[in-house]
Length: 483
Image (cartoon, rainbow, N blue to C red; front, top):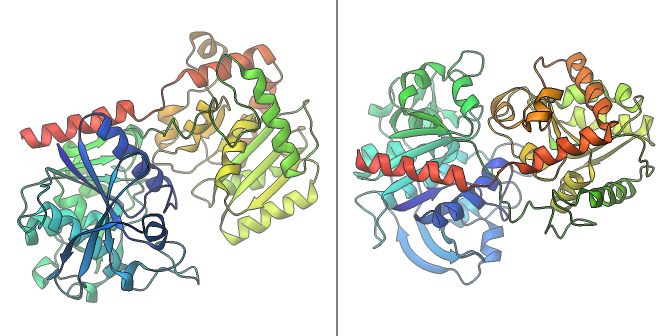
């Protein structure tokens, strides 16, 4: 099956979150499962630099409205994945974040930037495709490419099947009504069953309504987004399309996230040689300037510092966590108030808490290996990847029961431990008190070295690779084509 995989991010070159990781790993797993995949993404500066010899495939024009002409270049990733790069310097040759300007605000022309990406995806999947390679399935991701199924159905005359994956329903691609014409849409599209959403255009809503199949990144999240509490205003449409909505749990790239071969670590280890994990804890304490203690657990956070991730809950219990006793390391950036709060915590508890504001990929790997317990108290979490990194690294995660966290982490109990199912700690209420109770419980279990070792082994026994998810996507594609 020829699959065109349209995404606004792809790791390791352009990544702001889980979408980039998925786009960097799932296409390769699909190829191994027998699909012929092309990844379509903008030719950002990082990709221009990474592939200076990219080959020109086609020039695409007459895309409608104020969407400019673009050129399509082809490159091949180091692992052999074909990349199709949409080159439009006026829209994509910009520094930093793909969505935000230097002032931290959305680029004012994001509607044109990702309208162009969506229209190019539809063109390549449609009757006007200038290439010999014909798309059988167009697989779009989040709002940035969600307009493609709409363009394909009403403007490009394509027969390709379409799939839209929701990575985070909170981001809906909302733009003013006056962007209809610039996007090459007509007034006939401006209605409740078209692109209109409370007097705005919603890229995501258009995709949700007109794609052939919808997926999201965990079974629990698929159920949650059909409720008023988690539906972000889209629950009615998602309920109506419920028979086309499937939750497929993400995987992780186990060639990158593997403690037995991870070059970032102080010492390699695996499920049968866990003693070496202690070397990584000592190295992590040293790197963060904390005392090299072996008599208390080391908790960790690697995250965007936002209330969605529940990091305000961690900040609220920071003083009590340090008093257990326990240590905490935090790596992340985000809400400025939270950044300041965590920095203040570290100043009050220099022997127990250390904070790095920013992001460092190598350090993230060392934290997963060196920590004893990984904190993810998210208010909502479509899938989450860090809990799977933690499980693979024998670092039991402590999570709130939501989305993909509920699908991957089984709460510790003696009974669950003995059956081999327990692999972490789970709590329900998004409150500091509930989080702190679970932190105390985890710290108590950590003191029992025999049970802790079994919990680590349980965590590392799971298969978190893309093998099973890729097979499910292939089955979905095949069903769509047969239908």
